[in-house]
Length: 400
Image (cartoon, rainbow, N blue to C red; front, side, top):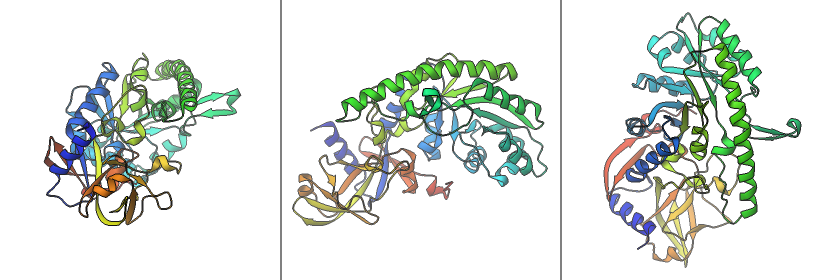
């Protein structure tokens, strides 16, 4: 029996008492993936990206392990909720326009001490000040560096369109604006190199494209390491008590950790290892989060239909954003239908061995987005469900 077949047998036995659709996390794989992130971080603490987990119980589990410290959140409302739940080191990774949230933050010393907000523009400071509603707590601030690689005098850009702050001088200027402004304290710098950390460099069946990606990423890492170090020097000249410099992502942990300027690494997808993280030469993770759909029809030879399945991930539309049928191995979508809102036909010889009521196991394209489809995760150890824990959705929290 192959390892994948053995996993299917374990998952089927563990969840035999449950009705599908359902979602699981294999704790042995989850913990092994956590160990891999820590090993690649080489002594620098890993800050967990909550959007890739979206389950408080699993955030607590990973933060209890050596090598992890703090959360990187994705909305201000989520940040405040996590702080009220007992998490005390939360970096909001994106700017916010949540005026009510800022009023709450500025009026509560516990929340203000636990949450750091992201800014890349004086206008965001203006918005926070206008939203304070009398709150006088110091708001902790982090500046975001644009990590994009710019070539040919800026005419070619490789990287996500995030912060407008690209040069050391631009970040130092905003740092001075924060330092001059009452009610704010500059504590950190963040730089997410998504074109390195979030782009696989071993695309199946595309050797030339894979080589081009590796060459681009090597150039991007060299350029960013030098620029990030210069940025940190420039900002520390304004704010010598800077607490942290955050960088990285699951696909670039070991490279970013090697930079002296970086004090902590951000990662989250590497805990669940969704399908978009299969194509990396820098690490090999174990799929830990899966979902099962039940077979409800057998339309003909080599075809079964499962209930549900239309769970595409965010990003540019394409087949790489679709979940992938994983167990049993050998099933694929009908190109004329794909995964459907209510039902999904699957093709392949393994279909002939599936009966109505059997289940097919899938992997989502992106990590935490799976949890927007399920209100609970069944945690599996060996061939037993040892706990069932709510996702954010299961706790009534849908932040975006």
